[in-house]
Image (tube, rainbow, N blue to C red; front, side, top):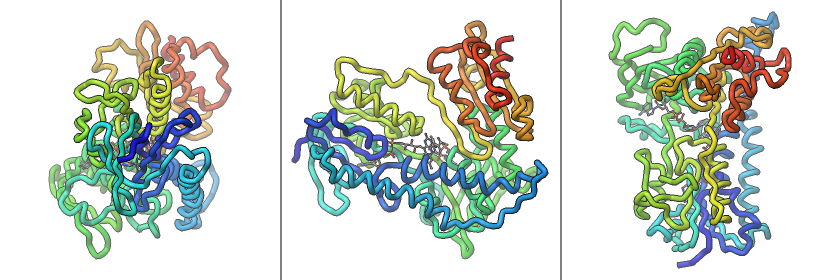
Length: 484
Ligand SMILES: Cc1cc2nc3c(=O)[nH]c(=O)nc-3n(C[C@H](O)[C@H](O)[C@H](O)COP(=O)(O)OP(=O)(O)OC[C@H]3O[C@@H](n4cnc5c(N)ncnc54)[C@H](O)[C@@H]3O)c2cc1C
Ligand SMILES: NC(=O)c1ccc[n+]([C@@H]2O[C@H](COP(=O)([O-])OP(=O)(O)OC[C@H]3O[C@@H](n4cnc5c(N)ncnc54)[C@H](O)[C@@H]3O)[C@@H](O)[C@H]2O)c1
């Protein structure tokens, strides 16, 4: 049994934890690695945010010829070189991952730190066993335990599905060649982003939703608009219940029943009837589960959400029996329903501050959580949806501003995009904002700032110049609707 001052689990957001402030402390840093190659640096860098957005930008470029004719410009797409795209992206990412690991392993900055590659599991609330990657185990105790152990893709319990070893976001970006066709099970964020990436690069995409629309967690109007646009570009199946999956000679076959759209453009004459979906490959994008099972978090007696996440308080202290466990902290996907990198980063900084300054604890829950979806179109959101605000009985005013109604929207020839802002009547407090369309993830930032700093509609609508004819006039016009 080796004792350390601090045990740190997970090299994603956790990799920002060690630093000179802990120079006098002994740290054991345990990381299992992510993806099939168990690489260092966590999900965002290796399998998540960063590579997907590099692929999304490439997909956006690949899509321009298809859109150019509307502007009187004739362009053709001569082809896409998948190995070149893939290797450019991972040729940039993989050395960062390897360099990050080497830095923690060898650099004098980390003289007080022992890096173990393996899987940590709790044998008590301050006791860990590490199953090392190269065999063997280490028994550890630590005064402070910091958990940033993340999440991993879920494969739903559909007969045959796990056996056919479908693609997930862990593997889809590194395939050897593009399939001719791809079925995507799930219709949330990962499905929307990967559908855009693969279709733009020439793959015939079918996206399969359990419910009647895509991006169900978004504001209803956004989700409905996204579903309508998606159906023009991908084969969109809705109301599908998967019953079994199998590999065929040419690819995969997914069988089930279909209550909604069968994806063939015509009304479903037989709701609830059987539907067989065939494609060369299948990507499963049905959510991610926190890695608490790998940690044996239950053995430590920690409280768990029904979805498996660790319960933490607003200071990022892990709870057991509803009370904070002395010296055990967690952040990111292991303990938060949002599963977003900016949330994981923020919570890591809060936990770090609180460990260093036990007499001046900070809360992590003081700001609304925004999210962006980098599909085509983009979607961005912060705060309450209109449905949530109404369900809470709030007195609200809602402004919807089409891109087509502002000058830059004319330049874009836009016909489908809009921003919605929800404000409290009387106070003008902004309760939520939802944007679907070009640069949505950038346009929403000003509203995130207003909500985070407590600025009302009138504080920002008429108290500044809005550059004409730039796209933020979309936000200005939506806000002006709320000041009338
Ligand atoms: C395809 C995809 C795209 C995404 N895009 C975005 C985006 O655009 N924007 C955004 O905000 N978010 C995005 N996300 C979500 C984001 O990647 C995660 O929210 C974030 O990376 C979580 O960070 P984390 O530190 O909690 O966990 P991770 O980065 O997953 O790190 C957890 C670490 O813990 C290790 N570990 C797990 N169990 C153990 C154990 N028992 N012992 C030792 N080590 C262990 C893992 O190996 C891993 O290194 C995306 C996710 C995916 C999958
Ligand atoms: N741009 C971003 O910020 C970004 C991008 C990718 C991923 N992420 C994060 O990763 C997380 C995981 O993404 P995701 O798309 O896998 O999850 P998600 O929660 O966004 O979507 C899951 C989808 O799977 C469906 N589903 C669940 N169980 C199913 C089943 N048994 N059969 C059929 N369908 C089923 C759901 O109805 C939903 O459509 C997200 O919560 C998100 O926070 C963020």
